[in-house]
Length: 151
Image (cartoon, rainbow, N blue to C red; front, side, top):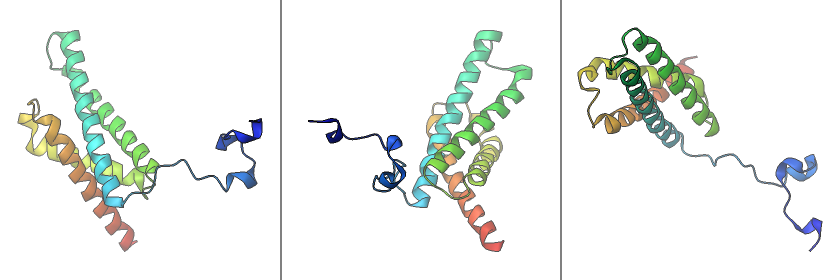
């Protein structure tokens, strides 16, 4: 078995050879499925980030209340979640990934702060927030489609 018989890394191929190699990107999924799946994952990201912030404040201050650090930590959590959403949606080849992720996270924040702010630290949060985030990402997808249609 010679060197020519082994499979080659697609990154090492010549341009004319590269066209015969299938892409390594994720297979395209239906748009609604990719958006909902990204919403669920972003929901878990935000729940994990809030849990980590709460535990860190508890260790540093002796209380889960972060005091003056609460707003900067919330902003950091939101930005991190938006970036994670953009990366996932781009990886899944979703058009308008940035706007969809931004609106999805913002809609989720509005819903959580408006409706669930007094029930945030219950065990159900781990299930409710990712589900809610999937719904808000689908709502954001609809808003972006409507904006694109009117443009």
